[in-house]
Length: 237
Image (cartoon, rainbow, N blue to C red):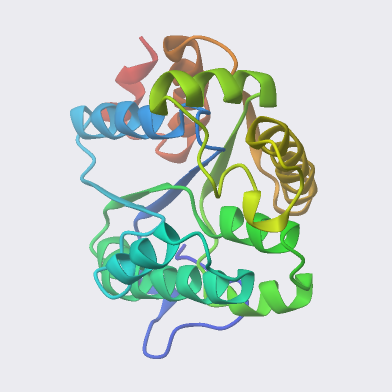
């Protein structure tokens, strides 16, 4: 059985031809999402599954312009939404669809859900956001790494020696202090992710644990997508 689009199929794309798997890992900066994506990519390829990675702000069409716009800390919510939606649409058409058609595993280090959450937290209308991402393909599985805001603070400071302006919600004036703003913003983001979890059936994994423990939980969720393929089942041992 092929893929399904959320609402509006891309022109010229027969979802029945998309035989690959679309796996999404969601989570905030500092949740370990990118680390787990790399671990899962290696594991899949070791078991014979060609994998293509996608993520936010990787489109050759707009990524450099988006990065420049974000550096000035003056990017408005609507403009940022449209930038990310364009970035996603370009990757969908030119990377994801061809890879899925060829039977690859497409592993997304964040997908439309992060953009939807960010947009709504910044005041966007939910129906407008839904319509913007109606062209998205439904993933085979969405894994959400839930990490407490306090853990996120520590991890981001350890990793980046500070807190990111945008990931702290400083653009929407939640608090003057970046630390306080980060905690408020991340709690708002998590509440919205919980709403999407119920709506779309995410699999939530406790990301507060060690890297190996989280990786095992993710593998246990992913393995059934490939059964009864014996190559992937060897990963149980």
